[in-house]
Amino acid sequence: MIDVFHSIVAALVIAQSPNELHRRPSTSTSIARAASPAMQSTVATRRALHYLTSKIHPQLPLSPREQQQLLNILTTSFRAHLNRQHPLSPPEKEARSRTALVQHVPQPNTSQTAANKHIDSILANPLFSAPPRRGSDAAHAEVQDVFKDPLGWFMGQAAIGAADVSKAAACLTVLSQKKRSNDEHAARAVQTRPGTRIADWLWSSGLEGSRSFIGRPHSILPQLIPLLVEEGEENPIWRWMQQENDTLVQKTGLTVDQVLAFKARLLAKVVQVKLETSDTLDEALAAFAKAQYHTDEPTGARVLRHAGTSILARVLSDAEVSASPELYQTFLDKVRAWTGTFDRIMESLLWLRHPSKRSARPGLAYIKHAQGSHLLGLDIGIRPTKKRRELVVELCLGVARQSMAEHRFQDAQVALEFAKDHFPDMVLAPPAANSDMKELLSDHYVPLKMTRRISEEEKEKNLQMLDSLLPG
Image (cartoon, rainbow, N blue to C red; front, side, top):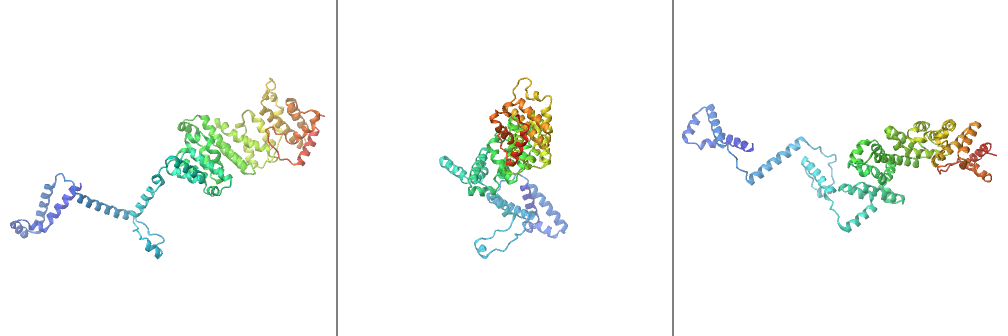
């Protein structure tokens, strides 16, 4: 196409050039001079067409000089077109100091300059410019980098495409250790939101749904979750929690059990952090309720059980539960969804600790139930597990205390008699140690090895109430 274009231009130039007409024989010249303007135009057109037809043949390659000329023309045309289509607005601050004007020659404000800067910024990326290290010196230097600036080291690894989940875990571990030692650099690093930056890297790299992340939750979640909660950036946590189980199984090659174990550990860590960093149960209860909402019913119990047990342990260990009655009630209403065979025991224990309406009636109903012994396996000679025995004893003593507080002494007697009949080794003691049993009861006996913060006044009150119920 370029060759034809050049031929047409050349033909028209030659056809319309006065010099071309003068080079013809004198006879033609005289005829052209004598002819009318219309006739001259016809002759010029014929000559142009004749010249064009004679030029239609394969064009020879351009010489180096012609190639350079063509390249210059195209470059100039492209730059002009770029400036027309994408004009740059003048900078907001054009005034510069006289020294700056002397030292720096300003470049023309064109789209070409902007494009060059953009390309230069790409080429200056560490991915292209960082030289690889080799040998023992490189390994030693890398170790020093990790301990000196763990987050900076990891982001450098991410920039050159060498980061992975294990390196992220190493970065968080070192950062956590330095933070506990009150390291100044660690304090500054925390201000840069390391948890959020690593979570963003997991998302951008596509590793948050990978086998290395889902299959090894113990390696990174214990350090990452506290940072995300502290930084107020919990969106990644719930994004991981809401990933479809089947999709993760297909992507990672893991089993459903392994995927559920990841989610269970994730939620348990979130709840643990919120319990440790708050004086109330509200944040932990809210997180648990949110996880329960986004958890499938068939497999939900396996995800919720560990976190729910942590909340229940906190409830039983506090003398007074500090929680929103609404959130507490939501947790209580759905406790049977994840407690399995312990559902009625757990529900009854939660009613005994309700922040606004404590009640011993659910626990008393469980104790009085006609199949109570069957539920414990006592009627067929099966000794219940230690955990179940401890929970039932805790329930009996709790029902007795709450019934006494409500002046329902007969119900309190029923609860203590049930505990004495079925668990004499746990609630009865030799006469010489009877006072020890009173102390055990007054301390709100906690089989789960928890401690209670009870005032001396409350202890004395419990002793007085229980005196009337203990065997003489």
